[in-house]
Length: 243
Image (cartoon, rainbow, N blue to C red; front, side, top):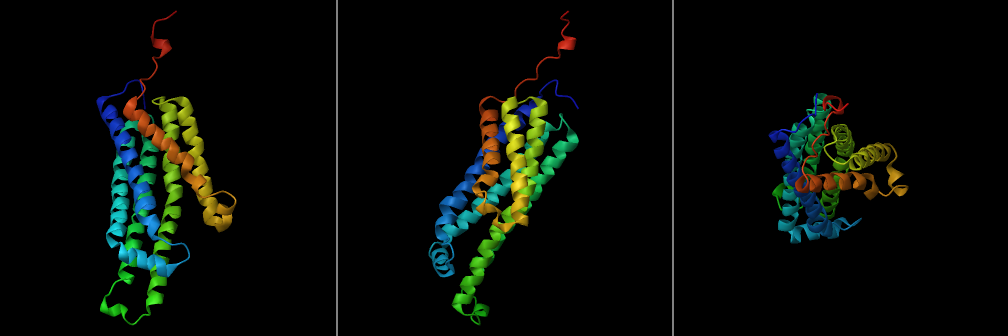
């Protein structure tokens, strides 16, 4: 495929990537660290259960943020495909599919959280279980959401790696940014698989470092596309008529 020119569909998709990327990132950070995080008490199922029941609306708002993030991820995937398909249609499709798989796995997290909320409810069929057992089961459901993320993380990392490579080949964004994206995203894939194989890997490499370079890359790309747009391809010197 060719990247000799940028069409209107690509320019529009670039703006969509900018908005969707930043909005999705803001939603997942707000939902996880502002709404859900304060309710979860590490290694304490009882206090976590009490917090969730006392702030159920806040808990449900966090789940809504996660679902909205998924919607944004699918929109982002589609827009990136529109931009990068002219570079290599097959790789652009693979990147889009990897990101959609991650979005689908991320949807399991709200389902686990709703299951936890159900366990903490007052349905008659729950009366046969002791409250502390239900609280422990609810905490297990919440913990499962982290498993969902780390199972999906290799797909997210592969999507970002493929897209960063296509950004590099297209020259639509600065070369240095693209190279950083390839390295940061590939690092995320490595860390994700290492963590799944060796659960104590995050004691060697802090788990926040797994995906932070990749998240930084995608955020900077979103800002770049909103402010600068797609960088026009350099003219082919062989066709300029220069002797």
